[in-house]
Length: 141
Image 1 (cartoon, rainbow, N blue to C red):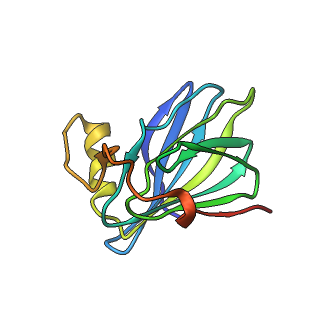
Image 2 (image 1 turned 90 degrees about the vertical axis):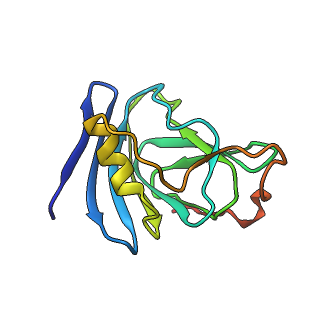
Image 3 (image 1 turned 45 degrees about the vertical axis):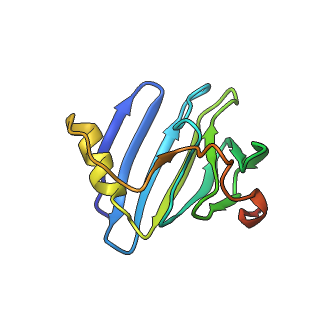
């Protein structure tokens, strides 16, 4: 498997492990207290996560419904659903993140690494709250 390093620092490692128009997969390590992006939505793709080790906390939907996702948990957030995530544990969280279709995610990640702003399918949380959390899929090991 080819790995393309995006971020490698004390609290966070991110690498692209697969990238195509159909999907992009990253592998990440978030240290204790490490936060992902602020609440946001995607209009044209699904953002999915599989926790390999540790745990992530997600907030999804207009009510910021809290989901705790431990090792072996899969979380899939469909288009239009506000979401954010972070590691609030005391150890590292390792996870896969899948964007399907890619919708510009790989180019955005490479741009962030290289200091080049790239537009992609990610938008601030809408004022109307977006779609409800009912479409979020959570499958626990």
